[in-house]
Length: 305
Image (tube, rainbow, N blue to C red):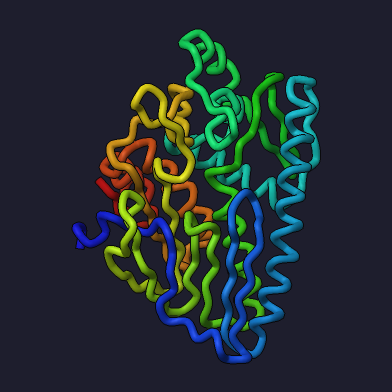
């Protein structure tokens, strides 16, 4: 089993979808910096997809507006009111920042911008720049209370890349449930997905072109973090987009990807899977499994060498 999952999901192919039925619907949009595809089967599937995308576009607006609002007010001593969605995202992020001793941290925005990975101008910062940017990274700078948020240092920036997509999957998942959808797929760029009902998913190795295996998921979330999605090569070295908050540099990972599966019975399971896959990539599989055991978190981890 461990060998089979050595190349766990990077690109998702649904192998058992009937797209010819008038009750089966599929729709794709660009959202939150990725390609979002929703598939639903059943009499209320179109309504589920339409409502989900309305909610997701609204979520994207809330995240953009609230993050800007928080950053603009950084260091001025005043908390700012934010949406309940963004407050919930930040609350989950802060919880796991504390539990992982900062291995997961949404205040890495300044470091992410410094490297520019995923932009047209990525670069390797100087040693002095890395030392300087550490002054603007640290979950202790973010404070939350009663629907409000505050950054206590000017220049600290929030990046929700390790949690936002998972939260978006949960938003759509709850709408699917409300519409009675019992079969479908919520796919956020294949980095975080939720299989509604049983789905056979093709597994592709990012270092190759072929599907290496098939896994069956049932009512669970799967999130993958790896060095394959956003990266650049400089002097023969690969620099990827997953920043270690401790070093403010791309994480020195023991595997080129880590995937986490969380069952749908867990509250906000996709949010949890998203956070944990980032955490596992930074900490490593063994340390993360120990962390999960100590905190009694039900999740499965698979890694690619």
